[in-house]
Picture 1 (tube, rainbow, N blue to C red):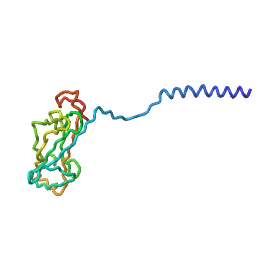
Picture 2 (cartoon, rainbow, N blue to C red):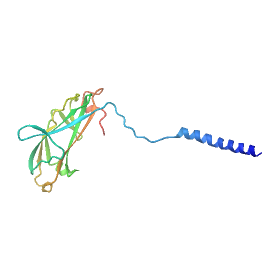
Picture 3 (spheres, helix red, strand yellow):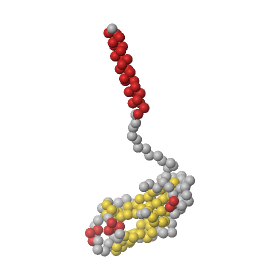
Picture 4 (cartoon, rainbow, N blue to C red):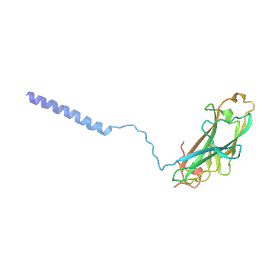
Length: 185
């Protein structure tokens, strides 16, 4: 009798546990976050200026220039394609005051823009041609012009040109950068 009772209890446990385990194995789920990449786009941001001898030199990180209330600063910005695929590129420029965006400051500067090779839309300057491997865009800007008259509170502060650049593959796309798909949002 005792043996039958034990077998009955074990059978009952198995009848209850096995369906639960089977059900759990079918509804098991997990959260994951994936990045899917098609191709491998890489670009180099080139920021230069013209020195007093007329030579183009790279702007070094954290390099400071003195800016008067109403002055101009030589600055050239372009992108180099350093991968094996042609790409479309776009660039966004802004000024940071002590590493923060300042609307008054950004409204007090204007750039000498290359409007032949770039089109401005939605805050971005779009390079109008696909950028082939190993090639560079034309300069987006050649100079920054400041009118800080009346903005004396900026004197002695650190003003930084902030450059954002993005690229999408141009292969298997339209020939028009403005209708290209895949730009980050």
